[in-house]
Image (cartoon, rainbow over all chains, first blue to last red; front, side):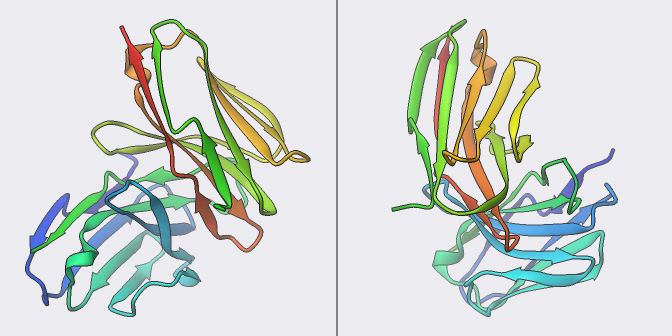
Length: 113
Length: 108
């Protein structure tokens, strides 16, 4: 199926651990994003990559590092996880300069204990 | 003041009612998006607008660039329309700013 797929769907881990969330899209889009949805359900952009190049890097701790090995993948690596990192993380993709919106992944619920 | 304001925050209506959700923004934009987040958490992009009006099924989205305002309308609402509707604006610097969402509950 054509989609944005992110894994894992759920991730429970201890404080201080390092974890990665993977995202892949097979839509041929040239831009991929990571968003964080906090406990109040407020969405905020974290990063945006266009053709493997970082174009948006919002104010997030440098413990968060996106990695884009190719334009179909944008992985999110988080070092030294903290309790406040608990949230739902969404990956999305779009085709820049098109008339179409975003396609979102189903989200990864990260719980840091 | 938030750069993207949605109203109402919560809306409960009876099945069949005409629904309007409003979005006002204070920044220059390249496009405005309406998103739907299902109770299960998944997010779907409904519309992307830079001018005028778009229609998809029972959903209609309009934007007035001069007034910096957009509306999302749902005709003949149905319980399956119950979701959170999020307005997001894409700035000219490619950044996306989200509204806080409108929680819609349609009663059968």
